[in-house]
Figure (cartoon, helix red, strand yellow):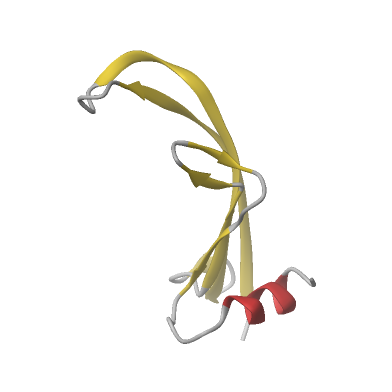
Length: 90
């Protein structure tokens, strides 16, 4: 079955929030990340719902965590290690 690997790079302005959780104007930090989705293809190029994916770096405590990667899998019983070994070759 043909699959597509979709990789996107983006930036997110992390809004500053006060102790009351209200937004405090301009952001002080920009979260730069890569997000990837691995999807079966319908037809030649149209992606279906992703089966696997990841976000690097992970977004933890409103900041980038370069020592962590967030992994998505469609089925809960699929271990992340299988994904990392098969797709990322680690």
